[in-house]
Amino acid sequence: MNRRRLIGMAAGIFAGSTAIGTGAISSSRAERSITAEVTNDSEAYLSIDSENVGVAGRSSQVNLGNNGKVATFRIPGPEDDLIAGTDPNGVGLESEYWFEDMARIQNQGNNPISVYSDYSGDLDQIAIFDINNNSGLLTSHSDGRSLDVGESFIIGVYIKTGDQPIAKYNENLAIIGEQTSMTTS
Image (cartoon, rainbow, N blue to C red):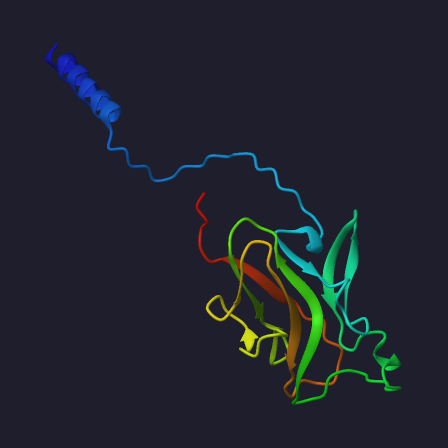
């Protein structure tokens, strides 16, 4: 009889201690629904409009299907051979190039942002720059171009080649718009 009473008391104490608990958990998962609309580069929070700025076809909007378009840059552009009768085939080895008027970047979001680029690929460096500001390449949040809501600027693309083999390179450049501060209403 004492044994049953002892087991009952132990079970009661255990149940009471689990009911009180410490509030700490080791893992939790809560699934929620999110609705996001994907749109063209020129209509996104960080608008990249290369259709209305590009020179010699070096920049344009490429159709991805389902009415989706993304900005793309080509060096040389398909019309480069129409300028002054030249016929360039690309950038040279061990060289630096500054291509202006590639796209308009606009902050269409709700907060001020810093715009910069990030690149890791086969060439030595690819980056964006503000064609109207000689402050250099925009390669980090701290040296990015600040944009208030609705503000825009024209970017250029900087390419630095190294001693890579002569070839056609299809590189990816991330253009980042990172919030700088919250606005209050």
